[in-house]
Length: 115
Image (cartoon, rainbow, N blue to C red; front, side, top):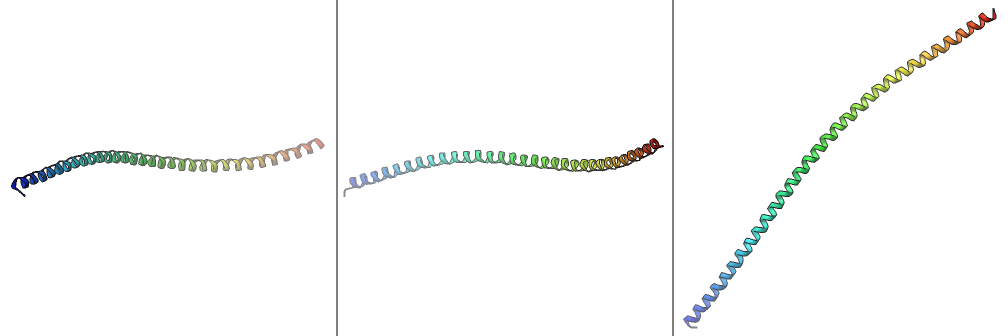
C-alpha cells in the first residue's frame, strides 16, 4: 500500500470518526432536549401533586370541623331531649294530679247534689 493510499484510508477513517462524533453530539442534544421536557413535566406533576395534597388537607380539616359541629349538634339535641323528657314527665305528673283533683271534685259535687 502506498503512502497516498494510506493517507486516503486515514482520511476516510477520520471522516467516519467525524460523522460518528457529529451523530453522537446530535443524539446527545436530542437526549438532553427530551430530558429537559421530562424534567418540566415532572415539575408540573409535582406542582399538581402539591396542590392536590393541599386540597386533601383542606378537605380533611373541613371534615373534622363538620364532625365537631355534628358532635356538638348531637350533644345539644341529647340535652334538649333530656329537658323535654323531664317536661313530659312533669306534665304527666300534673295530669295525674289534675285527674285526681277532678275526680275528687266530681265526688264532692255528687255528694252535694245528693244532699
